[in-house]
Image (cartoon, rainbow, N blue to C red; front, side, top):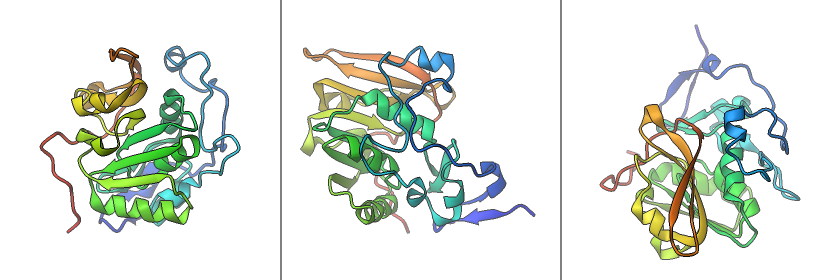
Length: 244
């Protein structure tokens, strides 16, 4: 019988479906392993960030998944965490983070906290991270993990990410880890002129990772980077999911 894991939310999946456990290098400055159709759309100066910020702490990825799948945390593929959600594969984390071109004083909005791994990556490179998670139990677990890892420049809020976090707008950069059909207008409005947003957009069978930019006069432009498959972003009428 196939080995199975069970997390506290009651999800079940065959362990062997995750593949053999491997260990990826903690950092890379090479794009040679990316498909050509991806590298051709990345800025020429792109240096892929994976699991270590320059001069920063290592990101212990296994600390941001449930204990049952920690052995698989460094596979280059999504790993299930809870509530039908996943932690993105390291390659996607690297590409999305790098496209933001983060600066030490940037204020960043993240939509979709999950268990906090992407938040931790952002916090190493930016000044402040505001993260919104619609599932209250995931948000609580993320806060616990981030505090345990010593992060003090991350704020987590339970809410519908479609609406962003207007109390702390405007944001220099935004990263969205769930896909709307179209970029939500509240997020566009909360992006600072000169800012960047990385977001998956489209229906599940036709999603594209998009780099969106707002120029100094407020014009919003989008560039498709690569095909992706993310869970769908909750719509404007969706309520916070509270664990029963």
